[in-house]
Image (tube, rainbow, N blue to C red; front, side, top):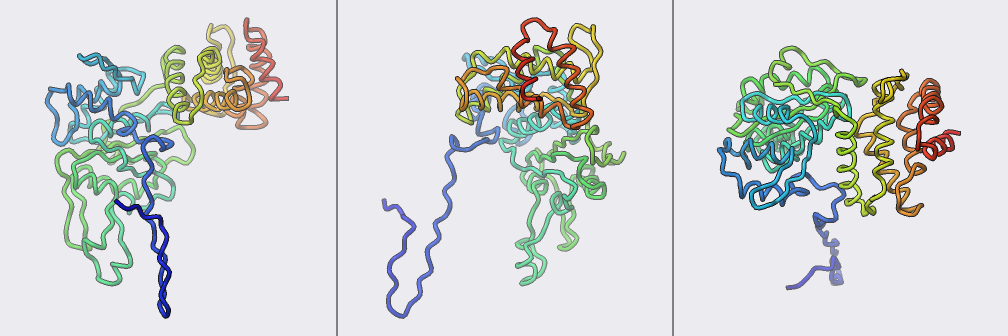
Amino acid sequence: MSVSTGTTAEPTAGTTTEPTAVPPVAPHRDQVLRPHAEDAFAAELAALAAHDDRPRPARWKLSPWAVATYLLGGTLPDGTVITPKYVGPRRLVEVAVTTLATDRALLLLGVPGTAKTWVSEHLAAAVSGDSTLLVQGTAGTPEEAIRYGWNYARLLAHGPSREALVPSPVMRAMSEGRTARIEELTRIPADVQDSLITLLSEKTLPIPELGEEVQAVRGFNLIATANDRDRGVNDLSSALRRRFNTVVLPLPETAEAEVDIVTRRVEQLGRSLDLPSAPDGLDEIRRVVTVFRELREGVTGDGRTRLKSPSGTLSTAEAISVVTSGLALSAHFGDGVLRAGDVAAGLLGAVVRDPAADRVIWQEYLETVVRERDGWTDFYRACREVGA
């Protein structure tokens, strides 16, 4: 079998030879910085499918029970361990999964950092085996991103036709009976949002230019995520909100639950970035989570001291980012052990978003809480140094 090297033969006299384009080679899954959920957890999904003898809705890869087990974790009869993808109330996950088995779309609502996108991706991966039918909502998202667009070269050459039509991820999901995802629905302009109303209520996407329509086949559904505490949001109309079953994802109830979430995600990210594990980093993770929770809730863990809250969200996702950055610092510029000095700079950046007001709040917290806390002297000094 010959292998093309991308070179071309010498041209003969009087001829012109164009270089032969070498098609790009798809990277191996192990080389991808962030694999899709269905790729990263392919072995778990396959193991669940092999042991799943419960009824499955049309075109679902797994039964609702297996989808919930995939998200929440568990142990299969043969001893296969399914790692939890979401740490939170089981009932919320069960409601989300059963919603997708009905004709109502699912809206995951919550403050930033409550794993809405993470849950959305894993739900789509478990239900359809494909989490890539995605529309990313922004202030500039056009209606074509939800409905369809056109290949204008073909449109001008041959007029409107199916060949000239460019289906959106939502249109593809309808045609193929899969799960589509819309991220940050409330960031999409209101008039574009409302293009979903007919689609979700009638399960039909009209194409007036062709005098046709696309009808959703069984297995189609849609997951949207949104938060209503961020700036630049567009409230959902009551007509559109009625088309969704809303599940509110809360912040972790306890500090231990949040520490568990942060630890799991940091380990996953560390493996994808070839960072060494941080066996001695649990103490620093607990400190970061404690700081975030106390400033977020406006009171110390023992309930004795009231605190001012900074302008940022201080979400679990931001805690994961702070710890991951600290792990990289310790790996490349330290001894590989996560220490207070490695997370201090990231903490300062997460807390102090408003240079004036937030810096005062941070300094007060350091002096009145951190400085007096037993065993936190190194943490206090590291935070003071980066903030000097």
